[in-house]
Amino acid sequence: AQKVTQAQTEISVVEKEDVTLDCVYETRDTTYYLFWYKQPPSGELVFLIRRNSFDEQNEISGRYSWNFQKSTSSFNFTITASQVVDSAVYFCALRRFNKFYFGSGTKLNVKP
Amino acid sequence: EAGVVQSPRYKIIEKKQPVAFWCNPISGHNTLYWYLQNLGQGPELLIRYENEEAVDDSQLPKDRFSAERLKGVDSTLKIQPAELGDSAVYLCASSGGQGAYEQYFGPGTRLTVT
Image (cartoon, rainbow over the protein chains, first blue to last red):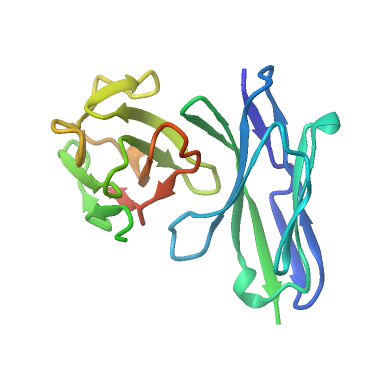
């Protein structure tokens, strides 16, 4: 069975702090894809990143970075120098074939 | 390129009334998903279409929910009759199928059943 766990329900930081959102997944498959989505208060989920199970290279995009470790089944997301606009709910998801399994989300509050 | 379109954005109905939601996916996307999102939770799949075929509807409460995607493009999700517990956000998403791995979401329809 596939499962995604985001243990942090809510995180509050002050602007310019770094913050890491944790994601742990379970699957027996060797081929799978992992995703992060952002859901701002407006409600629409926005795709941020995709990683496949064969590529463990960390990725950086501006202030965002992702750490994928198969040994611990984790796909963590770090925001450097957080900004108020980063306030949102962030979802981690696992794709197996054409089906997606979402975590319960982490609400990030960035205060000025 | 236009994104996933959903309507209406908000709907308030009384319990036992019917309601329908409409979704138009991104052009060329053959996979369409309907999700239910309760407050504070992640999206939960209701049904997935590959073209006009419903390939995964195991989580769809078929006694009151129905969906269709007749021409393999836009789709309608219906609830009849609605119950108080159906109050949630209904999300539609699409993806481009083989070789296209991420899905793109519409803005959702927030349903309130009173």
